[in-house]
Length: 118
Image (cartoon, rainbow, N blue to C red; front, side, top):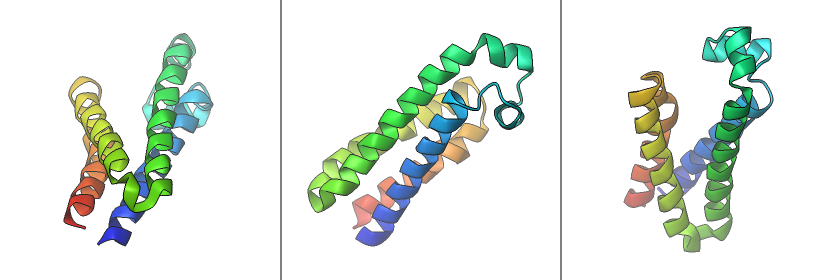
């Protein structure tokens, strides 16, 4: 179960690196606009906000990677950052788009569950 927990945690970290790239570098590009369903005008006007949000996603990914790097001793670090991801995902689903619950919060909740079961 520990291996599954670490694989799920790594998946959540990888997702947040992907979110970082989308929000910091592709936000106003056709790929980013298509994924987020925004117009070029909106993307241009909100580019700085999206980049800031992407940076936060990078910190979440870094925290999860740190917890993985620490091994068994990083359990508390992984729990903390996975909880942060779940809370951010629930809030994002409430305030922005319900899809965030499934893309962000659910994978983190699965990783957290596997971590507690290991």
